[in-house]
Amino acid sequence: MARIWNKHRQTNLPLKKKIFVGLSGGVDSSVAVYLLLKKGYDVVGVHLRCWNVGGCDVREAEDARRVADKLNIPFYVFDMEKEYKAKVVEYMIDGYRRGITPNPDVICNKEIKFGLFMTKALAMGADFVATGHYVSLSKNHSGYSLFEAKDKNKDQSYFLWTLTQRQLEHVLFPIGAYLKPKVRELARRAGLPTADKKDSQGICFIGNVSLTDFLSKYIPESKGAVLNTKGEKVGEHEGVQFYTVGQRHIGVNIEKQRHGTSGHNLPTYVVSKDAGTNVLTVAEGEDNPALYRSGVNLFGVNLINVGVSQVMGRDLSVLARVRYRQPLFKARLAVESGGKATLAFGKPQKFIAPGQSAVFYRRNGEMIGGGVIADSF
Image (tube, rainbow, N blue to C red; front, top):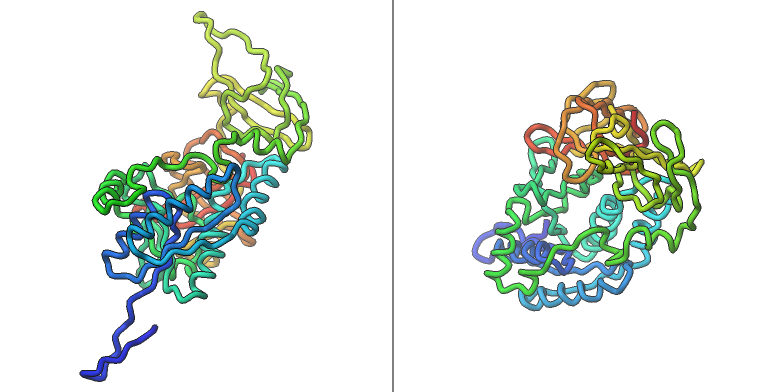
């Protein structure tokens, strides 16, 4: 720790901590800077220039710069376009190409925000990096722990399950204890130019382009059969890579039959997709048994505040979710060697997509880790 010399007596006092804050150009990271300044930290704003479609990042960078000017802090732009394209965009494209549904937000946090950004910030003299994520961080005798944010509607702990003790040692999440309306109130009170800016939606780097249109530039169309759960052909699709399990209104030519006396069509959902045979299987009805699974097999498992060796061979009772904003449900977690695990659901769950994340929690809101869904059973 850096020290200063007090001329009146021989004592050491810690210097003011330097925080590099990831300024995205939105209201959340703007308020994160404001709160840190109020606490007396030495704050530097950093916008990460990442690869994107449509040039939206130019506007975000300008908004970030305006916030830095308003709060009178140094401002940098880190050019990470090449790294982002390789580690996040290609990861997503390759996942869809293989027939899974990858989660680019999880990999962005792991590789970019708390990977490359953190490494560069610390090398430039930062003590911590901070972001506008809605999540809470706590430290006790056993290390650092992540908890759901106070605002459960905005909580982003689901996307942060890959973080490690080494990373969390240098991270701050200033807005985790605030509700979103309060964050906007603070932004207005501080006169921040992002106070009333709308939240971004969808996958940030593809902008207003649909996911299907984006993927079609990298993955060729390939017509295949759409089957119902009886194995009967009911239509055709343009390639299983463009669909995900649980998807509704899939935009394929399905020969629907009328059901019931009302004559209404039941909603149709993707049950499974097979990249090898290019077959898409669908089921009708929101409560169709074919949509449900009893558990998942996982790989790449990370446990934030628990050593894997400590829990290997044990059957842990956890709360879990297998997609963002899904209500937590009871499950049993069995961790194996090599980063693998089995998560058995207390009750069957629907819309389980391989490639997405299964994330585990304690009853007190602590997010203890997660893994990538390999398959379901």
